[in-house]
Length: 98
Image 1 (tube, helix red, strand yellow):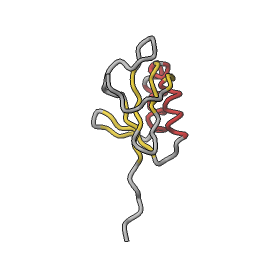
Image 2 (cartoon, helix red, strand yellow):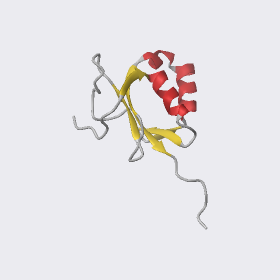
Image 3 (tube, rainbow, N blue to C red):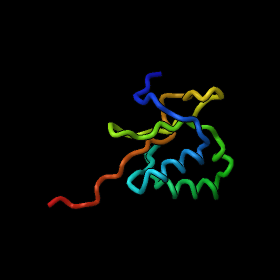
Image 4 (cartoon, one colour):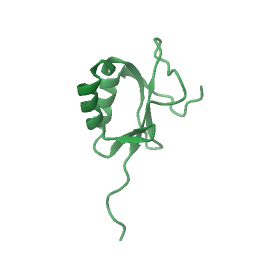
């Protein structure tokens, strides 16, 4: 499996979302044609699917050169597929051009 990101940490899904929240309001999560504010997704999962919050995931944080991703991982902490659960993207600027 080819990865663009070389550094990642294995965390629970909840800890991973909390890390993304700490990045600030400029980041969003995308996947399967949907977009979420990380705080809203965490709150929704806590209410509707709390069992999913303990699942292990690999967090590839965003860098100055690109977006980050969150992957589902196997028991050894390796991403299961090339398809991420979520992309961590920087939101576009809300300032209108002059």
